[in-house]
Image 1 (cartoon, rainbow, N blue to C red):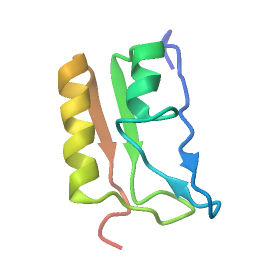
Image 2 (image 1 turned 135 degrees about the vertical axis):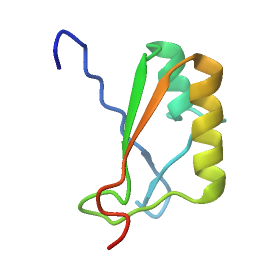
Image 3 (image 1 turned 30 degrees about the vertical axis):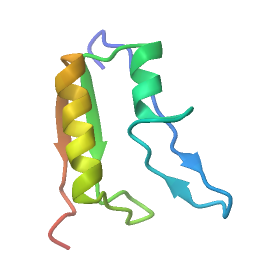
Length: 83
């Protein structure tokens, strides 16, 4: 990590036990994590390995807007997107 502090964020499980990617608006959201410890860069990996989870266009738009508002760089690792 070359002197950077790496912090992991865990998505929240819904009532059915499925993981949800919540950018804004509730406890456990990515926005709440940004407030707790503002990052300089956010690294995303979608489709997620091993779940295959992908984000909706709305989720991506919210993610980009959050990073823009907070001044964080967004690094999107999409090495599996064409599979």
